[in-house]
Image 1: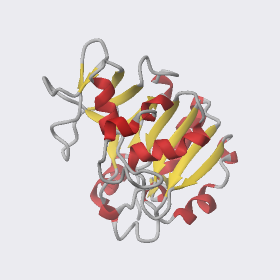
Image 2: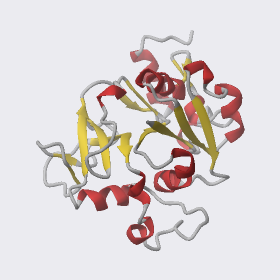
Image 3: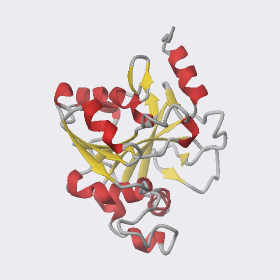
Image 4: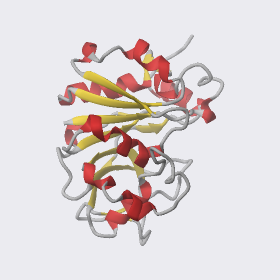
Length: 237
């Protein structure tokens, strides 16, 4: 199985820390945030990881190398000056990902999830990891039913998408039919979110999920970064 790490974000809410360092390369408890993911992927046996990059793209290869230190190969896919968002990022990375299901991880989260709990391929189009709703996102995203199927009808309590999942490449096969003429779809390569595609296939019962009850942080602000380091018992001084 290959993996895709979303690392192309601008990190605007994390400035000034991200003025000279991309958010996934910010140190968390002594090592870059993205390295936590690479170590977990290596433990799973993933040997090829695609990293989509944009903001300060030139910083990634000198920091991470070619992946050999984790027993893997890193492929950096530069999206240019404007990130392509999650759906466009998947579509743009498909030549490097291939035809088999792949694992996706947001580069700006931290979690203790054991990636071995994820299926090697989803039952439908995607399998998403859900977490308890954080303070900044109290209403959640999707409802996980007793059979492990996800719904976007908000007909009950919802959980938050953790930014981790296993996708089939076909999730973006008919992206234009689902996205329509949304802003960014006219670009080459197109820029669009994967969320409408998730909802499209949820309506068909083709997205499953699991509830991770362990630790998870969306490292979206400086305060959350500092709180995470404190929770990990790390002191900068």
